[in-house]
Length: 97
Image (cartoon, rainbow, N blue to C red; front, side):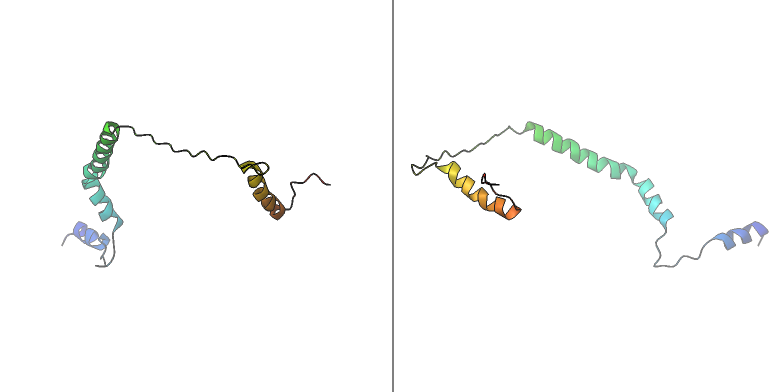
């Protein structure tokens, strides 16, 4: 063997069969870059076309409750519930000092 062949044999690593070489992974990515970029772009275009072709459907629901006749109605009931929360927070809704 010549001297140049000896150097290349010395520099070549002895890879372990269970070891993953980063260069091999990069080569696979470089070979398949068109598919890696192309498939998500095609899916994005198809999704955009389908979503723009769908009709817009807007739905809203509301419920109006009649007021109670026993002193204040719904608002006083809500404030009574909030008073308990204010007491837990360390404050009171009352006007006393």
